[in-house]
Amino acid sequence: MYYYKAIKGTETFTKAKSWLRLSKYAQKLTMEMVNSLPFDKPAQPKVTARRDNGVITAIQLNEKPEGWKQVGKMQDMMFYPKVSNKEYIELVNSVPTYTLDDMAKIAGYHDTFFGSPGYVFGEDEIGIIYHEDKTLYTLPSDVVEITRSEYENIG
Image (cartoon, rainbow, N blue to C red; front, side, top):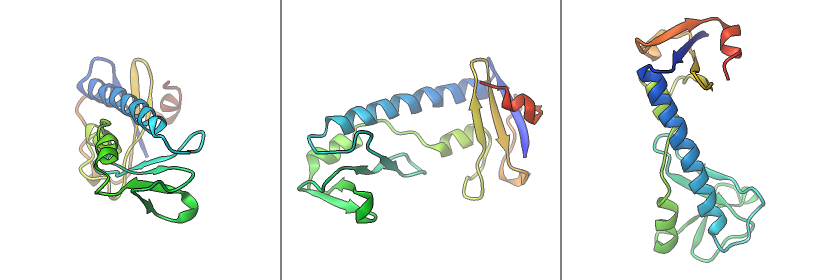
């Protein structure tokens, strides 16, 4: 593994921090939307989304509501509104999306099918772990190589 950091003021840092803000905002709105659903649900329901586009694919509920379909195994209790259930489809699709692939692209990855970077976010720097296979990415010009111990001290 190779360890790098993006320092505050660089393009990579600015884009990564914007992605982090969007992801936190989207997570907050997603949970507000889920908690607003008038169905019985666990105290901390799970929500799954597609990796490539961030669109919600299932919400964990304690029972299957009318007009919803089961997603995955029954014991997981994951459901999604049927296409005919337009009110809930629109509600689920109203939350902003973000993806880990978006963050990987900021770090210079071409495709995340074979690997993706690891991150640690600090106030003035972001640590990024790159895969040993350098054909997976093109390093942004504004990242700086660091040691593993430096990486572990970020944040």
